[in-house]
Image (tube, helix red, strand yellow):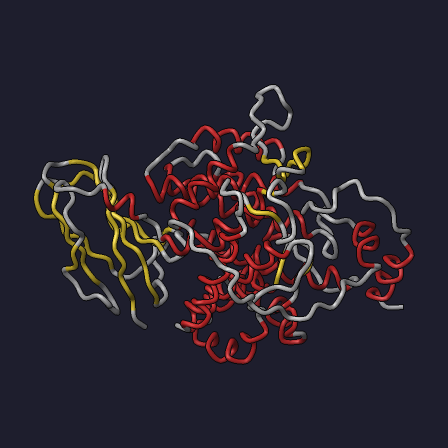
Length: 477
């Protein structure tokens, strides 16, 4: 009997029972949970199609992002005497479920809010959330570390890396870098397999891709070549090979994950190291990524992953159709906030009092953030004569190097940062005290770790004591 068959028979023989976890929640599903829901095999879903006339226009993406940040703050455990202080509740109908992934996601969203607006009102919420994460670290979450059903720790560690890296960039605080290093070490030293029931084959593909994409980004961020090498090798030998054997994985929805996560993860790991292979590979497989998920328990979450995947493909291939799908899916998810409280539910048929924090975080991270860029209209509108428009002294677009120019009315601290379209810091070509008058900063097109930045669109931000200015630049191949 093969291992796969043994696992399938085990799952099929587990008696269905009432679950401790409510049906609307996203925490770890054990083999028993999977068997009671699926009988050992998830149902086959037909690809969805984007609904006609389903969108409404929000007043602005930034306003919606602000509502999300406020919504999250109302669902955080705020009693310092509570053992779960700082943790993020699952949602309006699930206040007793508190998870590390929800909390890490919220750290990222609140930190990104400060990066976008310069408003640090959620710093106390972030500090409390870190308290929870230190008490309930990602690498000790439910499910253990087994290759077949240990997906939840791997998933959590991916979110922990992304949250800590952004937090360190925005606040200049390395207090939790050791925690991020531990999460990176967990991803490096563990793996997931396709050697169990179909549920695990599918969810493990998406989660491993997500974790490896974050490990690669963290490797770039911290100059850890070992993390980068592991992410590239593991993504190529496992995730890429699994999808080539079963391309329908790119349109699959299992647990809280969907095929867009696998597309994103491959582009942030294997194809980041082999960009010359991306166009031909995705020409073959990109149409497998669903454009709108089928109905199901976590439909809005799945559409978030598809939005993220389509944007990654669109940027890699310079394909406006996939970039447009990201915009459309984001607008659809915004329209799910029918009571204008900033929260959205896990699926369209849920009521307005059943909004979920984790699905709302997906909307902020996978949809709105990439549309807003690293600076917002509000931040740019605060620029006055102290920091006139950021101008180019070098070419734009450019291939090897370019130069930026601005002028200060008085001397003071200045930081010039290059971000990619996801808001991740790529390089900081200048940080120091600038003299009054014209300031020229050159960028050699390399990351902080000294590697050539990939071709694509980037944002430059200039931050002074009380001003923030940004503009787009394009690097050619």
